[in-house]
Image 1 (spheres, rainbow, N blue to C red):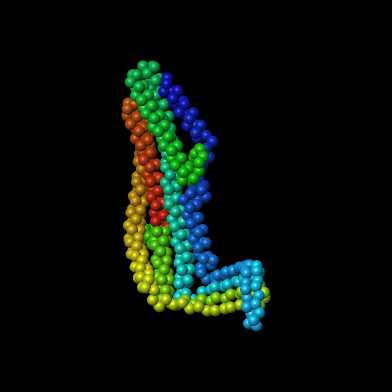
Image 2 (tube, rainbow, N blue to C red):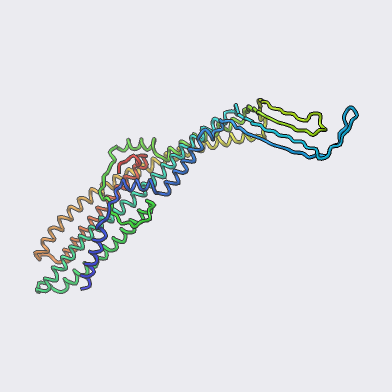
Length: 438
């Protein structure tokens, strides 16, 4: 029969797919994401730029050293009259000048603007570091959302395989009973329909599993054939009470920490703008050398000079059209805006934390309920199966018990991974996601 051939083909496909698969553990997935994910690579490059910017070479504290050199050659026609009355006419008279110098410039004092700009750069690095951490947290959260989707579909495939085997055994039993006149052909047809439906459900779930594996490889930034299995074991790691977790969220939440870094940067910017009210004192020092080769019409045929010159400069913008005043006012407004943003973020984090805590506990309760539901349906199916073999119930009643058990087991899988994903969101809010052993 065609359906038998299809079942054999389905079994062979399933066996060849599972056989030889390497398990991708949770930690291996995390390591691959950290090494390969493009979003994380971009964040790390931004961090490298911020690290370069905060260095002493970008601080303004080092002096500038400039070298200059030049050479001039003249070919002149000259008529010269000397003080003693003598005169001379020169044609194509050669003269040349050479010079070289090294100049050092250093700002001794700039109203402390350089100091606060330097502190801004350091704080900008800290902010970029937190932004990189946020990118990693979101990537890990996305990774496990997809990873657990693969795990759930893997377990669903296993359940559907078991259900299909039960349906196949029932079909064989119905055919024997029909051959010996113990039931009608209708039972055989009903069993065939159920086998076909289970086969279709299994094929569709396998297709979803393949798609989910490809989604996982995108997060891992890998372009290979996703022939692997995943770890379906779930461990819940939160042991602290609500208040302890909330205190962690207030001190370690990455969004709130970024807001606080932004406040520090705004404060340093305000202080840097205030430096415009103060003078700037600079130091200059130059070592120079020059040589002149004059033509015969000159009083000196050759002269050479070298020496050092040093000086101080003072610049004080007593009035620059009010530009400094406006910059200070705007910096104060920006600082206040950052403070308002922090207060708003604290409210949002409090709300998100309470929502995540209740969602996590609700899903844990649902998980416990579904575990009990599976036990009940398993007992019901076992008794129904015994009665069915004894001919005490119909195939329709047996099928209903089978479907009820399959649905309960599928719901348990859903509840298990929903609870784990809820825990991961709660860990991210408290800043503990990257400190968790998966």
